[in-house]
Structure formats: C-alpha cells, structure tokens
Length: 154
Image (cartoon, rainbow, N blue to C red; front, side, top):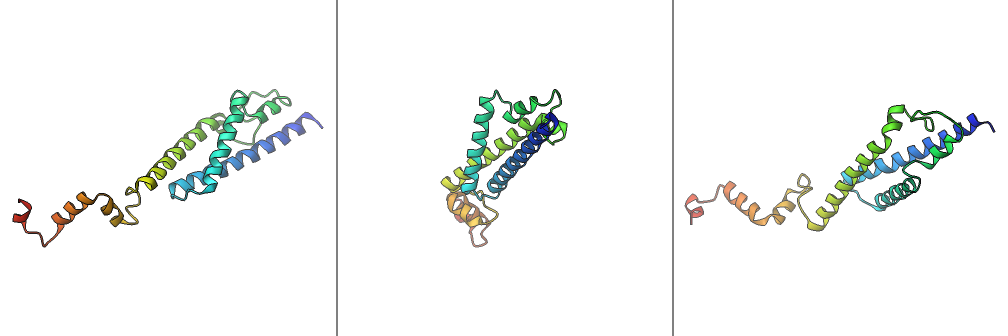
C-alpha cells in the first residue's frame, strides 16, 4: 500500500473518531442543559477522561497524528484529518472550553438536585416558594389585598 493511501485511511479514521467524539460531547451538553443527566452523560465523561489519558500519554498529541506523520511531511494542522485548518489548529481549545461549560452545568444541576433550589422556577414557581419560605410569605403578604397596613407595623 502506498503512503498516500495509508495517509487517507488515517485521515478517514481520525475524522470518524472526531465526529464520534462530537456526538458524545454535544449529547452531554444537550443533556446537562435540559437537566436530563443519565448514564450516557457519565459514559461520556468516562470516554472524554479516557481520551485525555491517551493524549497525556502521547504528550498531548493524538496517536493518529503520530501515525499520519509516518506517511506525510506536511506541517499543516489538518494534514491528518478532514477538517478546516483553523478548526484542526484550535480543536483542543474549542472542545476544552465546551467541556468546561458542560462540567460547570453538570455540577450546578447536581447541586440543584441535592439542595432543591429554584433552578426550575419557570416550571414550578411554588417549589421556589417552599424553599424560600420566609421570603415567599413576606412577598405574599405584601402583595395580598386582604392585608391591613396597620398590622404590618406591629
């Protein structure tokens, strides 16, 4: 097999892996934004962690890039993958930022579930009233038409 054919196979494989990780990452983003955290989100975290371990083991260079270097002398950022050059160059930065956002939202959702705060106020405003009882009662009293102003001064 010629080097160009081998490089093409590496590029196709690399692109398919990239697409697959995009599906994983954007499912994770979708799930945490809509508060639908399930086993697939945790599986996604595991896969992303595994990818991070592999990248760390190879000095933060994808192993497929190392293989592709055997078949090409190109210095372009996208020589080993079918992506625009700017995306190949900024891939780690873009996806690290997205994963940080996913992690922050996940932590918020987990704390919200544990603490029972008012994150879903738009769905159930009375839930918020039960959590912030005193504030809700005071607000209700102030807005009540039956309240006697003289009673509020006592």
